[in-house]
Image 1 (spheres, rainbow, N blue to C red):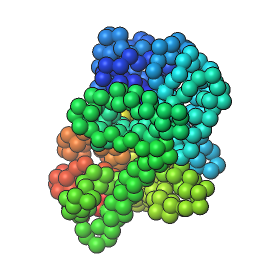
Image 2: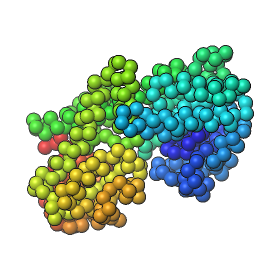
Image 3: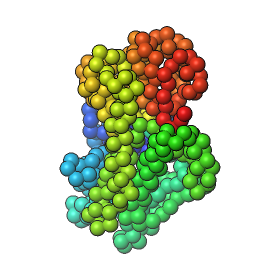
Image 4: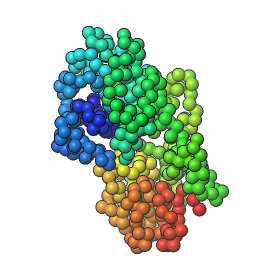
Length: 437
């Protein structure tokens, strides 16, 4: 497994749990040192125990020597980053192509090379070209196996997936039969539980990942717009979402209103898909609108907070509950909190924040004078307004009367709808949520 980041580490540990011998290659010295010391550099529930048990069993190792890791390998997975390329929205494939060349140079025998990273259409073909050009003396099979891991639920998503998508290059002498056989062996534990494994071509597999994430991003954006409409007409967004979600054609997931989607996938993948589509002459106008609406929403949420605080934040203290883009992760990438807090700070607010896992990652991204607190009530201490930005369960359990006693003001901007409006108003709050009376 080339890359010990989120995808590589979770995938490698889960393959090891399936019984495979997995060597994860990581070039970042700090991350590698942490892994070898038994420290998991990311927060993912259950991952530390899974890694520890498989390291102890001898099925999972970490190192920075690709040649040594590949010495007896049947397959190599590329799980490196594909960040948004500056200027045009395309995925930056520098790391993917560099990994392909390094794999080819280190290979000692014929090999299956699988892209696990999220990559645009055509990447698998280019990986195949690089491999064969670099080492014409070997036969490389190439496949695309995009991940569908939700942060905070990644292990269950890998072990009990809705589906596994595998695109295979069938242009080789054996028509991809060796690659298919190896993939089927790796995923045999999932076949036993009847998880659907979809075998297709490279291009279809690559596009499926982008299409799935773009559709979910549109679903999130749609329910956010419906929440805004509910506020104007007196509807309740939770009842709307329930009524929609009970329709089996729609489903209930990703119908929770909030301040806008973020994270490592939706923002990056929607931008990449629109760039791919523009280049192909088939623009995805729905996805383009989704991207624009989502960015505007984050700014709109900041203005909502300012308005509730009386139109100005100068000399006022704002308590922030939650920083990460979602609960059960320490990931701050594209988190809605970043542009929202930047705007509040610009308006003169003193910011007191608490997040159970994300504060270390947030320090480099937020203004220097932000106060980092030890718990939720400390973040609310003497605050004029408290804002909920991430729906961590520990916030749901807060006693409203203790929260009210800690604050100087009484305004609550609940941008995740974690509390009951009636109970919060009974406790004396000027309580406002999203899409609810």
